[in-house]
Image (tube, rainbow, N blue to C red):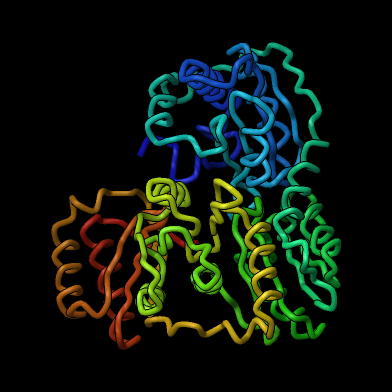
Length: 455
């Protein structure tokens, strides 16, 4: 992993390195020059930019446009657009690349930059490393203003909206369904409620009043409580919650109970498998998916490919094996028959289509598999010390794994977007695995000499 490219692009606080004017412009210039050398559509000389609803987005977009201009590229500006919309439009508009200015599920004070190559896939780690190697030392890049004027492409988002509608089976609709839609005051606000209404649902909209500072604030996929309460209050058939850039979604059934990414993947995998549409007879899951899901799918004749965290890793495995479904427990789900990246709105459309086709209530699919007891502790850290340099911690991990005797697992990793150490333990007996998580956290802090930071 490079200096500031994480699992999903560059993240940080605008005005602080690396999200400063000069460095953002230089990232754009270096990336564009590298992408032009690697091969693009004939005659391509422009870049597509979209952003979520953060108030820092327009400024970062201008800095990017200046950098692209320095590389000889013009800019098409989508305005507010979801990450999946940019991924969809990039290969269909003949551009050098697509860029999203977003920090996804992070709070409003953060922002970020994600690149999609001309074919609609996220930039590879190798290319990210090459971009970083081409940058000036920290703090030394300076913005060279060229008066770049991005061209308005806001109308292009309608093409993405039409695509979403086209994926819903023509012989079905959502008439008679009451649906709570929480957009987290993010990029889905102007797309999702109208889409589901057009498909026939009665929509109760939440989190659809972005003001630049309220994205992901007590609404959306990370804060589903309001959506759950609204489902119960309005006696809705189900609810959906998106994160700020709408590349993930979680559901609530009519009882207000959450269905996370694991449960949604399980439902879709069974539906596609029964219809002969699950290519390869497998799904791709990350190591964060519950082991109970893995065992359930295997008992139903569905294989599992396990990959590291990150929807880019899911995509790579799907492509390598020619599969059609994969995703993360967080709600990033890829329906490869339709899209090259995780798409929260598309996932909601496909889930509701499957529900209509199967009949019944969503609660019938809430407990398809029995989750194994799981503890996930997010330890806020001062610095990300490589875990392989911590022998005491490694010994304790091996001891915990031996205690579980193959009936569970222990997994530690640093977040790629936040200063967190994630400690995940699964196994029989919640009290036992909670004790293990506390021991691992204490050992990590003791061996690194750090103190746990408040979150």
